[in-house]
Length: 303
Ligand code: NCD
Image (cartoon, rainbow, N blue to C red; front, side, top):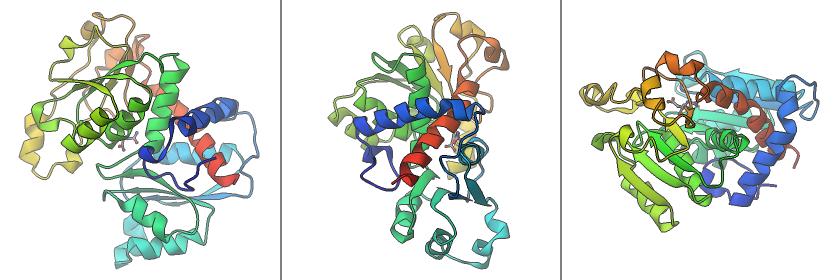
């Protein structure tokens, strides 16, 4: 179904390809909920994670296992030959011969594309530095679609728009759906100029501001993100922007229908009280990682 064979950047996808992943995910959702499946029996996924992860790694693993497949893991580079100085290309060449598909998370932007050029199996980018996180975007879109909001979407994306890879991937995808984007961040964490001009060129409607209060009544989705502490070259710069935004029940009261999303993990940007409101969707969103990753894996492996 994909022309590409790898899943590196959401920009490599057409709207039709995205829609077909979302439909496939819908079809597979019962398996994510526990129906036994064997679509991926005999297949092995290698999870290569050079950065921390909870949801991405475990939902890939759950997706694979619930469809009858198997998983091998490198979740601690310190315990592998990476610690002896092995480069990524050699690791990828080797691991390719042990599995049918690789999910790679790496701190360096561009690592997944590089890895794909050395791999003899499909590579899925599970996050490359501040670059892209295409599978997160697909599950974000799935969440929005399941709420019937994908057409006519007015979304505020809040927090770290500079370093947040989930934001970079999501904004590109949303420009295909003609969403209206409200980009809310401190001036230091605005979306990179290069991405902004790409979005504008593709006809996206963008409004940038610093204050959520200004846009809360305009949107049907509030997509909150964590300030990406680990990407700041200078910790003092992080301290200046840490804790800038906090979503509270008082804020939500200004727009009772707004749906709150977050790729997670959250630190302090969403008040725990919000979890109990009917607006909160972030844990459901995390669950949707399973059917969406099932869809991606089965499309790549059924070729
Ligand atoms: C995100 C990531 O790793 O980019 N997490 C995830 O995959 N759900 C978001 C983050 O770390 O803030």
